[in-house]
Length: 175
View 1 (cartoon, rainbow, N blue to C red):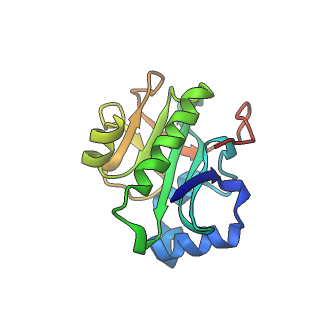
View 2 (view 1 turned 90 degrees about the vertical axis):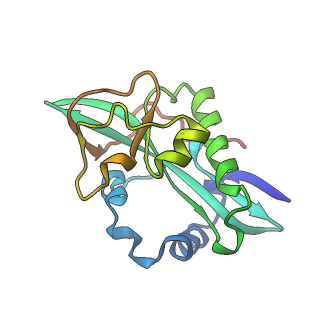
């Protein structure tokens, strides 16, 4: 049976090892890592999936911003959503996404969410679209149709995605 727990209750070394297995050790070269920066994930929105005491999946959410003409619009970036290769296709990623989205709603952080991912999957199951991201740019290569967002406060304007320091984001999580 899969149990979801706060990600900060898991040994970071275990998380990094699983991310390497899920995405490869070159994952740090991806644009998403540059967008997130060197900060910390938002603890209240980041979770781990545990089965029989073993880490089988995780989701991290990050404080980022869209910068346009000196104006910073806070956003929450979901991802990576990682599942052990031997457990992919079992619905663990969907459960982790649902948990993070529910937590964002509870905390009032669901107004401006974004991610880089498959538009068919994230659109169909979670309501993410590229409708308002067409003029956004990223600090690295990104397939435009994979730059997705959802929420009433998602800006439909030109700007560049950057990391931000959380200001009023809760620092503890509950599963």
